[in-house]
Image 1: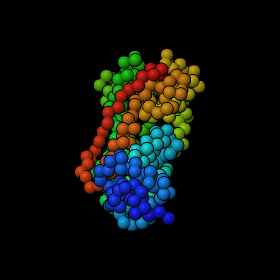
Image 2: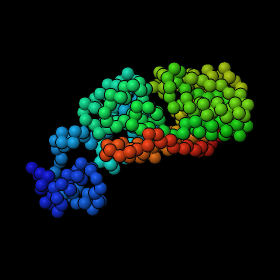
Image 3: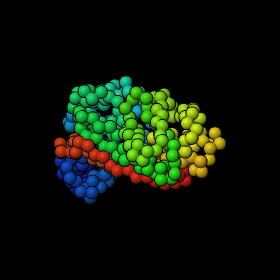
Length: 324
């Protein structure tokens, strides 16, 4: 069985250099990395992960905790985070919390398995519990005082852009859908931005919250149909996700409301679903790829002991398609 010394001999590098490459420590040239990769393939060498983790007191794993793996936004985020982590020499340990009570269980599991750090997506974990975690914790779309750092998009800006667009299209009675009742979410600040523009422009608007079960099941048809029948003068909808916006399209079709002639609709996220509906969805683009790149880089720098910014907020922009 090949050893680290064999890889060093085959690659023409020192044992310490090969070790640094395998442990992703310090600057290493692409040429040196390739030499080690070729030598490992030639010798069929596989690093002993258990021994490496004992030596470093951590593994090359990142714990990734998400509340919802079926939702298009989280599926896209997971894909981008995994890709960026791989480029930095990490692997992903994926945890689907589904409900908030499982987040603490998964955090305990990640720390028990000596992960290098944790990326927590839209977590609901109590802030005080972060103080017990002695590894980097990067939060996505949620700023936590006790977290290491957060990466967010400008949700408030997205709500403002949506309201401004609907009003500029001639809408007078607007409907905002997406906040989860009694549970803080990024959609809350989207609604705040939307509300501020409506109040500034003196536009009529109604806000409709959804239940937690509807969020996890991604079934919004009933609440959308009820809202459109109750607020029959509605001529513009801002949905806090493309999933809700797509189902708003279905509700309008069922109620014989023509889009975009009688109703304008704007979603949020700019996931693939926005381009496969008929008509295609106007939406707020969230820079998921860039957010993933920054999150992994921040975690890596924190592991290396570097100073990192506590909060990073990226701008969003409106992508106009056929529903406006």
